[in-house]
Image (cartoon, rainbow, N blue to C red; front, side, top):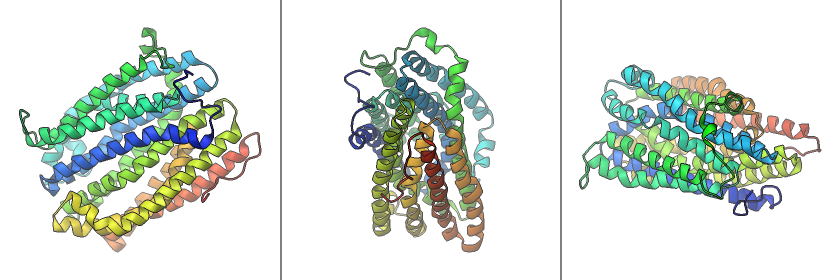
Length: 456
């Protein structure tokens, strides 16, 4: 590692986790702020517009899943290669993500252009929402290669001990997107008035700019990656290593997409206000969830490095500290949302029907946060260990085995209240399962290890 990078082997765990997580947390918060701005401007076009974007959200999760799977797999593999001193294989991994980003996108864009209406109806679009959803979706399709590369590159920066690079890239995307949004949506100045399409165009332009910046950062002399032209050609052994971890992470995003589709179909029966509520809740809770994602981004490369270097006590300490940080954040956030749900919702909408639905919905949804902190950390640990199947199994248990049945059952029994209550109940069950598997994993290490501290 270069001097400009962090010492993953010797620096104290608490400060190292903070340094690894803070850039990602900063970038995630900026991205969450961009999502705030996006919905703030779109809400000026009416609840139907927010509902239309919400319908497209599970499709975005589906496409983003390719980036998450590629990035998590590549980052985990590269971190283990750096930990074991195999720098050339780490560099080859970085070259593969450029090829994979465009290859996967080609497989997505063509059917999306041909079957867009059928796809949107499958994901919950009603006759009232379909025209707006179509406008947004067709433009968004062409941003796919930039989205995949942007997500993947961030994981590789963290794997080499350069989390600031990931922060710079994601912050560029968020700030540029937030600045472009009102100009392209409303046609300010010399820009055309594109309405909902303007939000998709601003996302695409900002993601392209981020990809250009990421490529420049990979080429810096201080980078541990030494990408050569031959690294860009398909390398099946490296690709298999990436997706050995990455496919489960990809499947996790796909499962989330399926869950969101069930939400869209369930809420569609209650009208656009209920669908719009889901979109608003995601943006509000996104502030906390993105911080947890940032902590997880800090945990993964540290776990991968320590596992590759056989520093098992240091690995366990990293997980304990991360659970503590995440727990403090989520418990405080849950309390905050119980008190301030009403004014937060009014930032996004003045529609009395949406406010009446969204305020109690946010309070119920927030009850899942105290469980989410530890859940994110433990799942990130398994990804860092290269055990993506375990992470996938936990998410499938929550979303397929628990959340979808609870969503359908509780909505029939308790209406909208039941729809919102399904999430915290499923997260509580995931907490128990993840705690048990983490405890078992720690005990499997050569050195004796304590159980994971759920309340440390």
